Image 1 (tube, rainbow, N blue to C red):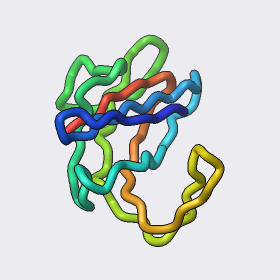
Image 2: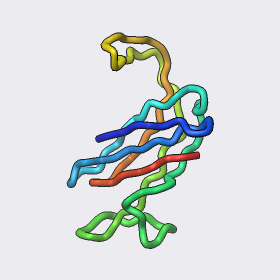
Image 3: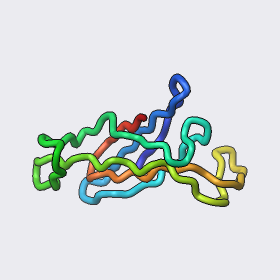
Length: 111
């Protein structure tokens, strides 16, 4: 699993990838408080697993592509310990988006 974001023009764009070739994965991606108040909705702006028929999801069987699963609205998780990249820790609530990815799927999420 890989997830990161970029803040562009006061909005946060999320990129998430599942590198597992066999298993679907659920991932909570931490997002910035400012542009992502609780309840903010995200959409799949791009997925490499686009479905041929958007009106109904399809399961991946062989080379058939599965429809991307829409992300959950932004939600707040209470007091947590966050391990920072410099080795320090911080405390507090965080905002996350739950992302569901099919095997080998990459999604770009936007508002």
